[in-house]
Image 1: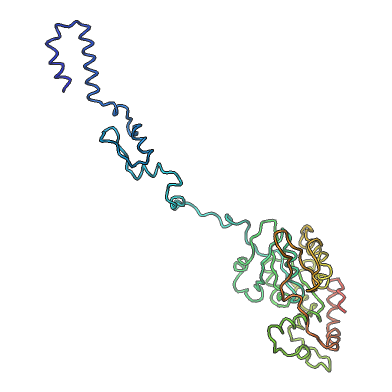
Image 2 (image 1 turned 180 degrees about the horizontal axis):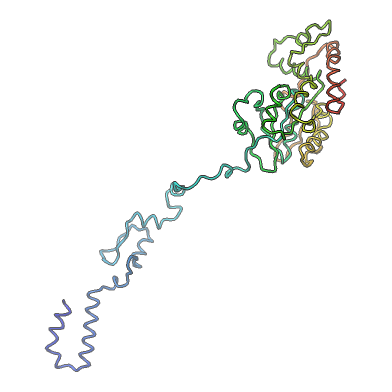
Length: 370
């Protein structure tokens, strides 16, 4: 409207001007009218974009406002601030925001390997050297073993295989999972239960002179029950007649031939490896070499890993590079046996002799327990 009024005012004087002057005057007036209607800041602003002046203000903190100017229209402060803040300036909680529909990572994502049912089990025998075999073989990088006795197949079978699997360590596909529970060898139901889990399970039995084993068993029990009757009272029904009490657990465990018969109903002999408890003390590397062969492992555990501890009377593992001291078995291992009457020992040797001979024949090896 202002431009129209201006043209009307100048129109009466137009006859005094040349045609060229009129053209220049019209152009000038048009220019002035254009900038009056469309200010410079608005003309530079694209739809939806911030002007350079707005951008400078936002970069300085998005808190200062421009002087009253229609050329800068700020978005909502919260959205601008959120879009401009760096990762360090954002609240810690925003770093952990996850969409609700994001799937959870798989179970093996955070830890290597999976829990598997054991490929091999040390099934016996108590006070034969099972803990030593477990501690020695688990040095091998391809062996992972449960540290405690699970007693699944004799005491906790009703809990199910998934409960049992949960007790196992995580292993890679190339590694062997193991556990040891010495009471398995003398539990009647165990062979059937293990074969139901897997008929391919490899079994290790650590055996020892049954007389020495019985005395060691009694010595351990005596430390827990000081008022226990004497060894002879428990071992014989009538010592004068040499009648041994086969119901006493310390005696019954040493009847290896009888227990092995039960296992051979479910597993072939080739799937059972027998470790000599005596040779495990005198030649641990040799016994472990045979164990590694049986498990299909490379012979990595060798004599360089052992030294003989004269105080305890059995071998210990040499100091690992990551440890400050050697690894010996616990204080309960290597304790001094109680003294037993020599006649009682000879009577027990006579009692065990036929069972030992039968056991030698069954396994094809003479352990020389005489």
